[in-house]
Image 1 (cartoon, rainbow, N blue to C red):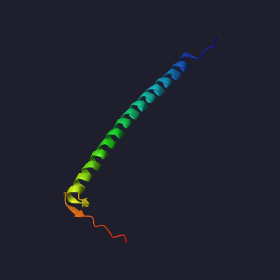
Image 2 (spheres, rainbow, N blue to C red):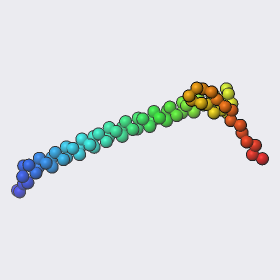
Image 3 (cartoon, rainbow, N blue to C red):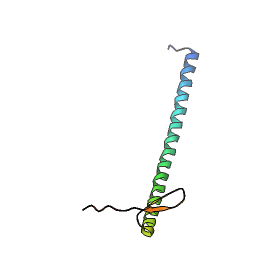
Image 4 (cartoon, rainbow, N blue to C red):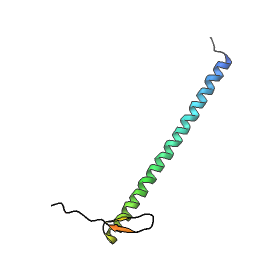
Length: 79
């Protein structure tokens, strides 16, 4: 049976180890991304719920997030 040189084999093995490490890291990133996307959706849902509560209390308003002041949103008559 013919074989490649030991150094060549070691070089290929090292490349394969690097590929495996990168694949592992990418998998970890995907898991982290998945978790962050779920967290994002959860926070967005909470915010939307809170906005509805504020709208019930104050009506339709635009809120300045710097100081908490707000202005009413005037609806245009679409006749």
